[in-house]
Image 1: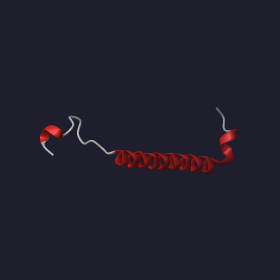
Image 2: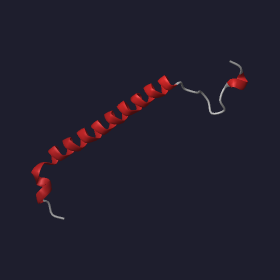
Image 3: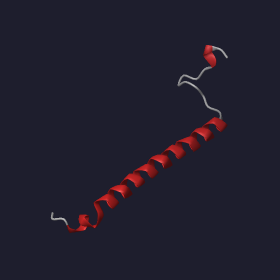
Length: 56
């Protein structure tokens, strides 16, 4: 492959590589969303029912 055949934007992925990248991106997104949900639930449980009776 010569330098003139490379695309100007960088590496061109095959459809199979794009599909794997998409699956990997979704898995990372689900993992981040799961961690956010986990941290939220832990925070709410640590606050307990006292969070509802606090003064504003």
